[in-house]
Length: 198
Image (tube, rainbow, N blue to C red; front, side, top):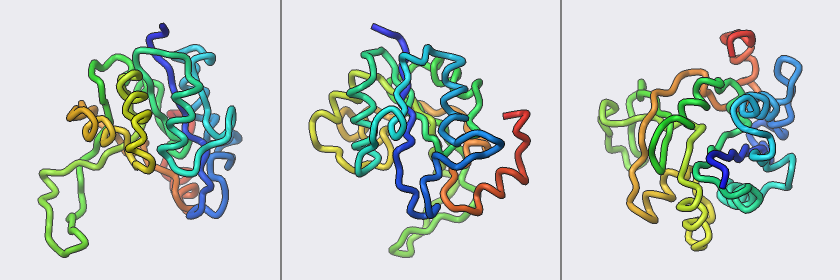
């Protein structure tokens, strides 16, 4: 069994981006390719599945993850990486590989006041913003998804928590893990980040 595999999520329709952002060219390279090329520096390409490129993605994020897990060669740890976060660094991917734990995620402090839709407040000092990429015990994540209970989740740490009570291990994230969601986000990246240092 391989130690580490990776599923790159590049199958979204990009409704808010008004197009499939994973194929938008940033600094001469499609977003998904930025992520893939970095991942290839750490693990063999045979252990990487790009959902949306190698195979058609699912109707939801969860279904895309399930497709990727099914195609991936069995491994001990699986990294889930989003094409929409093209500024992830090789060092951050390596940190996920090196970290022990069944559920590992990057987090960043909350800097804004957090208010619930019912107009109650949360103390931002007690909260983190979760960021991807993340890493998981492959067998546990695959088994949880095979239960059929998690068809439309926004985050796999929640899947492992709901299924097994496993709380995630935190790694310090960064502003480079910014997620491309809207067209204006491309201009933000180009204006505030140096592609030579990513």
